[in-house]
Length: 152
Image (cartoon, rainbow, N blue to C red; front, side):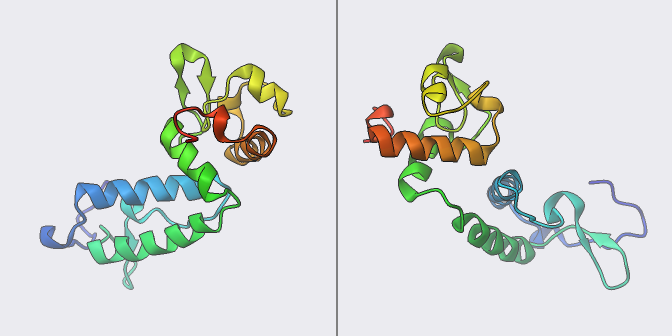
């Protein structure tokens, strides 16, 4: 983050550690991808003080923000079973490509399977909500066996 000499500073002991930063960025990105409105990215853009200055976010502020982002992510329409499958298959990344390019998207669809549930184009290029919808259709139609390792 660019900091000018007029910006306020936070002592190093109050700054978030790398794990907390990673958690925040992952949840912020996930909320944003799902069409949510996560607001200002405190980690990258800092916190505006009452005097109008910008300073780095503290651990406490980031933790508070993480709680809000988790609540937002929890209101997702995806079942816990599909959420677990997505985490196992792609780490929840809707743009993931695996198996030498054969499996694509958050749920690692093959192109044939994607088309069989009404998907068009490349699953990894489809919006996350569309991938969630098609995965729910596949799960309802064929069960978790479509994901032999992650669906068990």
